[in-house]
Length: 497
Image 1 (cartoon, one colour):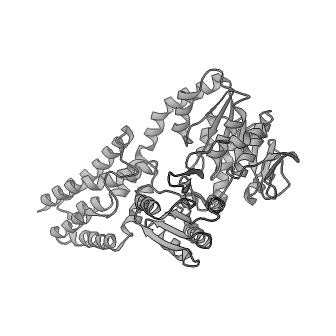
Image 2 (tube, rainbow, N blue to C red; image 1 turned 30 degrees about the vertical axis):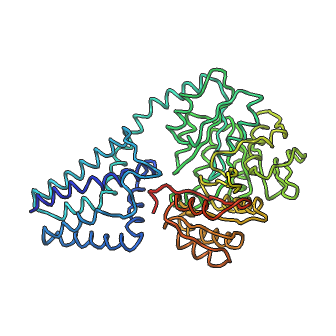
Image 3 (tube, rainbow, N blue to C red; image 1 turned 45 degrees about the vertical axis):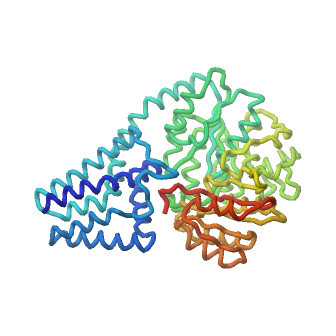
């Protein structure tokens, strides 16, 4: 009987591994993300909670009776809702994923064989139940190997960047860094030969790839967007991408799930200043204003502000005017993010380039960041589906109101994630604000459903709950007409519940 249980367990590991390996891949192979998502999924919906109880009963019962272990095997039909291959975020069998699969599969196989040989049925049940944690353990074990394997590409990129003689502009922030990068590239590309890291290639291997594949002879400025999920990551990047100018766009509760406090976020982002020749920092957030005070003696800093007047580059809200050194430079179009433009202007000025305000009206939009289009039916669509954050979501609602003064206004959202202990409060506040501004709110999925429903209950907006993005789009197509406007605020891949 014990070998039958082991065989059944081995058969069940196929769907188990497909689910959780996909989660690990979508979460950038960062431990303990797989375990964290497993806890979320097993606690989503009554069916998954029942299956979780069955798992636990099977594990406990397997200590006394081999047959009870089959309950843990049967429970692997869940978590219900987490697909095997994925719709929006499909599993890709890269070499890295295969290594993770091989290591985690070996660990589970050892548990199954030892359990069968020693007739400890609970080991087989345990191997199935903790598979997400086994993947996280494999990620930790493989991390030094992955680091060494990537070194040759990083070394090649470092050599190429150094030999090019290009000045490096490094940009970071909780949000806004991609848009600031796009704006800067637009403002200076007519004066100097520039290369900007593409899309969100903002980590070690992404930036190495950008340099190796895109940096060409004659490049004068390389614009590097830098992201981080933990302390030391940006410092490591700056060891081989040493910034001539470093910029911090904004600080907010994005990634609080990992950092826990905004103070820690600032510490991690501030690493971009350690090797920089000069800096541009937006000082609207008090923690960044304090950072300027602390670092101003070590390097020259251009300050940027949108809420106060005491800065080198100021956005004056009353008339949407951007001021440089106290002098009006030009008006900021309504579709442009003021702080991101102000940072780009500050960097251009640091590079010795006089930014042309005539270019403000032709600034390109970063993809999926409040980009505006009109459908064939005349519905205004505001796409803000990438990297949603509280400040950006509020700006998105303002943009929605501006584009639907007479028509129907609709917010479509799964809510915001990675906000740690503030996630429920921030999503509730988003829905509360939207409920007073919008005619309809369409809530997607279960991740933030309860918080969004609580907030939306405090306003007159009608609320519709759908399971996924596809259902939300179908609702919009069926209910909106010419003159109406919809804001798609954030879009979670389907490895989220």
